[in-house]
Length: 202
Ligand code: ATP
Ligand code: MG
Image (cartoon, rainbow, N blue to C red; front, side):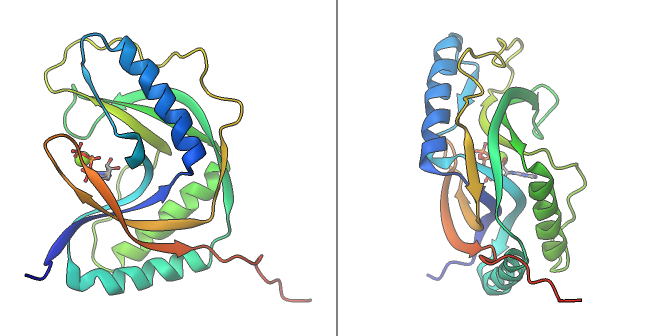
């Protein structure tokens, strides 16, 4: 049977070198998580979420892709770097927490990009993002009902000195929820314009 819908989101993927640094960090945090209060993410799935679309009819995919293509085409590449660790409350409920890595460097460009993506998709009928965008990479989420969580915001080797990376495209992703955690697959890539913006001569 043909696929009717898929759980969609728009993301920035990270290079493998950066993924490896985060994977080592998760290994260290996991060792400190002696009570197993956090579900740590699979390193291969780590990404920056720009917009969550949720269950999306497959027939809409082409028009979503063309909106994302136009959005990406007018952007230029920018640099991000791995920042300090942090925690915040998850959407699921006041008691759940998310452990994340913050992003620094050219975050103004990341925020602009997220706003552009939101605008393009709102124009197609998706709900507008009401919360401020906080650039981060999710490392783990506390299990339901966990009351006290050790501090995961300190790590002697974090942030790494060489955690910079270049962003030159965005991706439409599919999420498949499974009991042991979500699996993500890329559906399409949208490159930013490679050449600098052309300025009109005076
Ligand atoms: P699980 O739901 O099993 O914990 P997950 O959150 O990684 O796994 P999804 O729920 O499919 O998987 O979410 C895909 C991506 O979209 C993740 O980066 C998630 O943080 C983000 N996301 C999910 N729901 C929302 C939402 N309502 N608003 C913004 N981002 C969201
Ligand atoms: Mg989720």
